[in-house]
Length: 302
Image (tube, rainbow, N blue to C red):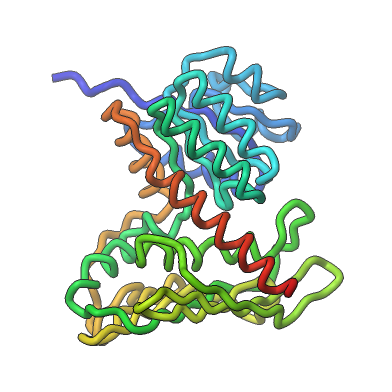
């Protein structure tokens, strides 16, 4: 039996993270890079001669021939590009944060529901095999009592995205996913800030009758850390992205595959496209994350 045709993806944006997509797509059987939209003059040299490079993403969408589009641009452009692709019946995978404004995120969420779209947001940790392994053991340690997370590093310093949104989207997405909804109460404080746009933030997210999530995130840490511990009545589950083992429960290593998180994201996106069924739960989670980050902004301001 012949293999099914490859899922044809377009990529909008070939910056630092967009180039990670370019490299990773080369390692994903059954998925092909069909076109790229980028104004970077170096981009044509990063793709095969058969892959067209458009200067404008609108021209790329109008050219057709795409099953899905990866949106890896500045967050301010996510809503317009994502909505345009969905209206053309093209599946979208949007980088985090989904947007910088809850109103735009809500518009995308409503559009995805109305159109029956396939729309995912790349909260990359949530697709990684170690994180999925942690999720599978949560019932064994329930009820949950405390969540502690740190997502921090030194840089990058982005003019287009506040550091608390860039780094905070990760732990917020993790906790909202674990608790199946946004917190009832939020307190937050700005621990550090500098003229480069650097920030370190501490936030507490609380659910009525449930656990408190104690989160620290930002781009002014001396060393990179991406980890979360979930404490329950039956013990502690731990996710740690920068070492081994990456997932444990009560000190014992959990079983998980060696597939890289970004490859896992792309396989998940391709599987959704092949199924042909509406799939916008990831976008709905992305919208909740934007709402929580906006509430953290307000808590800091107050």
